Image 1 (spheres, helix red, strand yellow):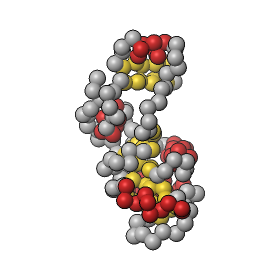
Image 2: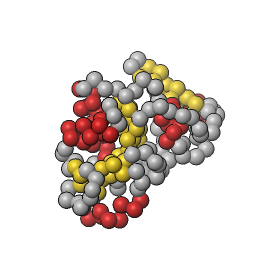
Image 3: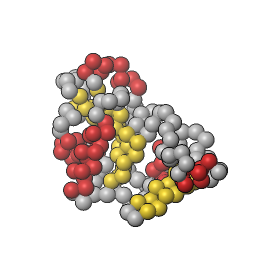
Image 4: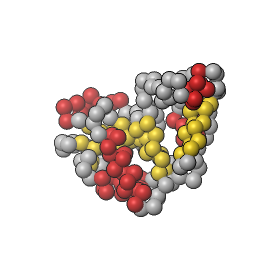
Length: 170
C-alpha cells in the first residue's frame, strides 16, 4: 500500500510550533469545547519521527510483522486501523481515511502543508519560526507580537475555538 492520493472534503486546521509549546493541550481543550457544542471533530497527530504503535508480541504487531499491509483492531467502542506506508503519508491521504461525517479536523503538525495554521510562537524564538510556515491564519503567544493576523494567548480557548469555526465557515 502506497499511502498516497485520496481526496477529502473534510475541513482541517493545523496547530504547529516547536516541541512542548502546548499544541496537544490546546487541541485537547478545543476538542472538549467542540464536543460540548455537539460538533464531531477528529484529531490527527503528525510526527516527524517513526513511532511504534503496536507492542511487540501482541496480535496486531504479529500481523504487521507477517506482512499485512493494513491491520485493524476492533473492540467495543473503538476501531483502530494501521496502514503500512513507504513514506510519510500526505495530509490529503490522512484526511481521506477519516470518516466523512465529521464537522472538521484539528491536526497537530504537518507544518509544511498548505493547511491553514495556528502557529505557536514561543517568546524566545519568535522570529526563527515565522519563515517556516505557510497559510498562517493566527498566532498563539505569551508575548505581544506586532502582526496583522489575530493573536491569542494559549488560555483563550473559547476565543480560539470561535475563531476556528468562523475561519471554516461553520
